[in-house]
Image (tube, rainbow over all chains, first blue to last red; front, top):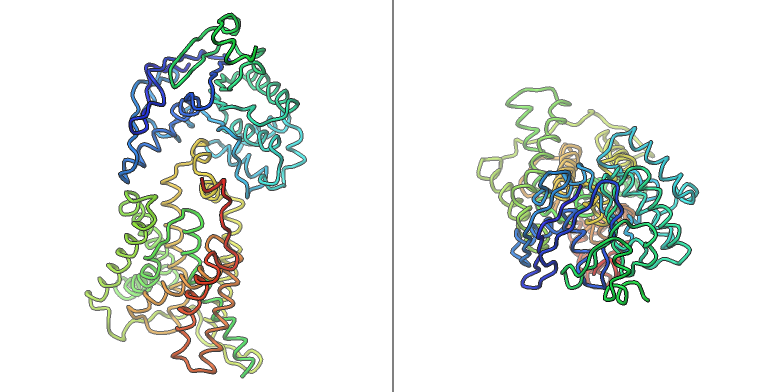
Length: 247
Length: 290
């Protein structure tokens, strides 16, 4: 479904992604693991088109020089030069790290905004799904999103991404900063989202909490692929095990 | 005497709010300080005058056409002039100010300098309120101000485009990742602000003759109201208009009309010296700025 072929990203002369090759098959949950500044967020932003957007803006005003090379194909189609909105149209939705929400808007306004590219009936249908998935949101729907707790904001952020009706959902560190209880809640939600036929690529620093749900994983360091394989294969790799499984 | 101060203070406040509305809206939604605001306001007056006199179209049709034309002009200004300097605040100010001066001086060059230019009132005549004569146009201005405020609230809270624009203003990258296009959003917000400048011009210009210098005065008023009230704040816009509206009427009444313009300048200077964020301005939280 998603094929990333020798993608490299430079910020000025700093290498953020180094010749990465990643592929995701329809219906899979694939994990990307790595420490801070390993390049996880750059990878996700590059798939969603945000890096390209930033590059074009910087180019226009003569700012930082960003270089993106390589090819990104989604459902067989080259998308590496598409605008973010075109990629959303195709079904690639990014749920950004640190669960950003629109703080001045109510929960329901946030969710409706998530369905910005979709029709009225689709919004209605997705809204029902999101409220079923995260029942607390129904109670909070008229509250300002900025007033919610971190865990609740995470639900709103994931909910917004779902409202956009993803085919491929990119979740950048969905468990970051959440309580163990809330982490379980999100993992449960991810499983349910997959049951809807959504393919998921998610990133985490530590693999252990998402180990039970991922089909395969990639470990990256300094923008470079270190190992990849099924969950079991990663566990059996001594390097990866020590660094990312906390064992 | 006192009733007239109260009434004209209110009318003047509505005039100021209407004048500053487009400027404040564009800044709030896209962060662009549109220094061509006054020129768009004035251009609306001349465009409507030309449509009325050269094409002879009915008044209401001319009004609607003018609002659309000026709105498109604003969006085009974003697309062709602002887009390349997007994100560099000083360049945005210089670019919009240059466009504004170009528009005003174009009209001067084209000969719009005589005392022949005025727009008809929406409704002729007037009414007496508490012993003070007020013409209908001034009453209508208050109505338009209140109506627009309600309409804009509805637009920004209930419509898809309005929510998208507010989303873009709050968190660009999250908005982008949901499929909202940032240049599209900014073009719409500059266009919308320009259309509001046109509405203000068409409502307020019938009160007098149209002259080029109004363009510069309007920019000054828009700046004074938004700086006093606080940029990006709707409450601030209203309170700023009320304070300056009454202050200038009281000044004109007791010190003489030549002093009323000074009120705006003094307001800008005093606010910038004491509380640069304005009365209701929000300093962005640290985490939002980094």
